[in-house]
Length: 77
Image (tube, rainbow, N blue to C red):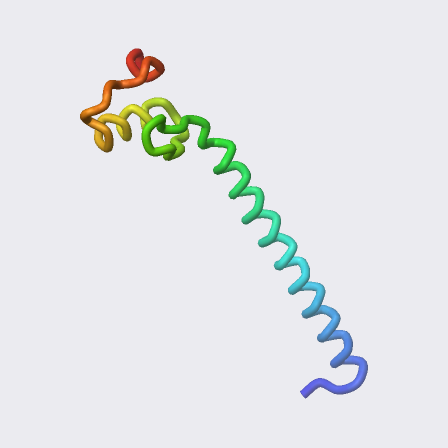
């Protein structure tokens, strides 16, 4: 086991490494969530589900709401 000065140096190095890892993880998870939320721009008029692009929205609408008429914004997609 390490003693004295060596122990203190080891602890300082480990705590610095852990703080860097926590900082990296916190930012990347938050940034990814925000970016994913920004990408969901299309909202289904029936069930309020969010989709990233009109093609996915059209597929969702045709599969989940076949009895309803297609919205105007999806007719040309």
